[in-house]
Image (cartoon, rainbow, N blue to C red; front, side, top):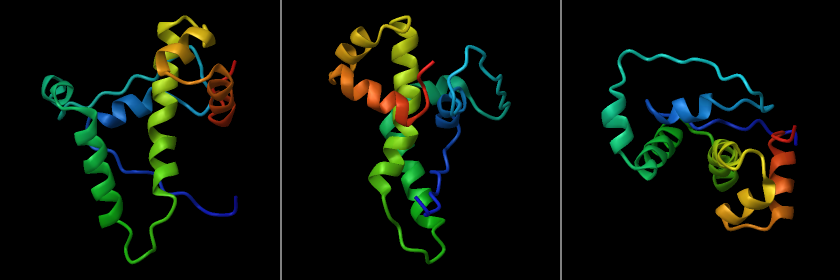
Length: 119
């Protein structure tokens, strides 16, 4: 993959979710503090609001470059923290995690390898 992939610029709050996952899953979580973010109001906003806002920022920041692979870009931002949270909830049980996610366990394992989330 010789292409450079642009990351969606996140709005306050969505970055909190994305920042708690790293390219390799670890048991330690980095502490992030943003004093300007009112966490109560952030939690009341649906995820779709943050996603739409981030995509609008992405288009605005293209600076004349042609957008591409947006679907994969969004999935690459959303899936890792989703999988990490569900695996934490199931205490690492991939079969239960796949059931909760509504996907096949083989698909989950493929995605976990893709995002380097396997232990």
